[in-house]
Length: 294
Image (cartoon, rainbow, N blue to C red; front, side, top):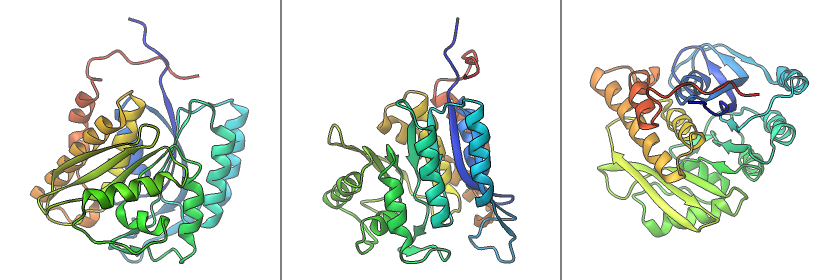
């Protein structure tokens, strides 16, 4: 049976050499979904910054334009542009340029506005950064903020929850009004036993929910696991809500394995052992490999 062209994503994230997050999550998860993944690293760190001290950091902002220029000479086309942690206004501007230069009519632009959690901005960001991130979100087709990031994008106080559906659906519609047609809002819960996300399609004005078991503890890198799994499923043709359910289940499984093993939460979650199940959930097991993209 002849297969279609393999889809290709551009992933713009930092690299933490230890501690599973950002590119060290996005690359294997998208690859497991059958997506050819081209990477633009924004920085290299010895570890991620959550709970570690003494880590090394090398900013790669100046390398990004040269990478993009070389790719343009190759005529590369992308089915998705997927951005995560961006550490400066300069990187926000460069990503806007990447979108302008590489987006075509079929390219899905996905922005995960990684900048805050637990009601607070990350220490690296000043109070003006959310305004810059909101401008980038306006250029996206799909954004994936948590509830803290949503509050900063909307310039409103953070609400710690539990939430009501009226509140969540108001936030979703206000986020869509920034520009993206689709929004996935993470960290949604209505009662303590369950946690997950809410999904909004502005064109249809339709809201859906994907919730699963809440597991005790706070685990680093789960946002990247979830976002990468969701984008992989979307690129494989799943409707957004179904993709969100696949991603929630994959993320919860990763957390559960890590919790049961008693692994240091700073080290990231065991998503690797869940990749075979993720592949099965996408219906890829046993399917012939697609032809390499042009």
